[in-house]
Image (cartoon, rainbow, N blue to C red):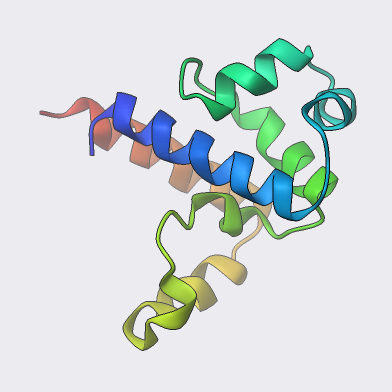
Length: 109
């Protein structure tokens, strides 16, 4: 997945989770400490999200961090449940490291 594709997938997932939580872009922006326009840019895949915002978003949406990165409906796929369990067992720092690795891997073409 190219970086641009990743941003689009992440944005789509963020919007989906925000709407499921019944939270407006304005409320999410306030909780995370950014402008409403920034949330809109994230959701449309126009701007990358900074790592320090990930835990704030998860907290505002009342979800574990890994759910922001589940782009497919993997919870219904038995083979993928191991990945979910693995991600759930990681600390925020470990997830940040993993996210950084993924970003670097995406740069390799």
